[in-house]
Image (cartoon, rainbow, N blue to C red; front, side, top):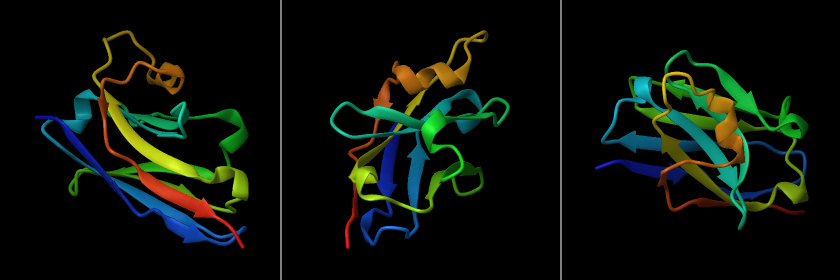
Length: 125
């Protein structure tokens, strides 16, 4: 059974940082794309392709957010720096197995099959 469990959310002041974690189980990361999404619309934030570790970001977030993987811990991270109130949202981790020719970056616009329950990030003074 595919499972994704997010953690690391919380309250942070503007300009602060948080690192979200997504612990995965039930599948091999090397075959999947895993991404972070946020909000009611589950807008794509960042995605990493397990096949080659390529990372993709929503353009306006690149530079503040970094997605990374610890394969040994089966965990995907989202490091968020210089957080602003508009970053406040529930952040979700999601996964899907791309077809051989599929570019994982397109998942930022949708198409993930497996979702975690989310972790709340609140940026406020």
